Image (cartoon, rainbow, N blue to C red; front, side):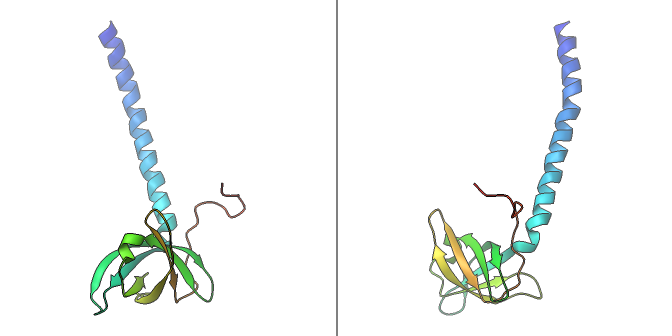
Length: 128
C-alpha cells in the first residue's frame, strides 16, 4: 500500500516540478532579453595595443554626453587602454576607469552617450 501511495505522489509531483523548471527557464530568458541591449564587451589592452583581457560590462547610466559601464576589476587591471564593443554600429569605444571599488567592481566612463542602461526595477520604486 505504501509503495502504491508513494508512486502515486511521485507521478503527481513530477509534472509540477517540470512546469516549475520550465517557468524558471522562461523567466531567465525574459530577464536576459531585458538586459541584453545593455550588455557590452570590455577589452583591456597593454601599452603596445595588444589585448590582455576581456570581459562583460553592463551600461548603468547614459545621457547625451557619455555613459558609465560596470565591469569586473580583474578585467581592466593593469590596462594601458580600455575599449568597449556594444554592436557592429557601436564598437571600439574609448573607456576610462572612473572608480574602482571593492569586491572586484570597476565603473568605467565611456566616451559615447545615448546607450541603453539596464533597468532591473521601475524607477518609481525605491531601491533598498
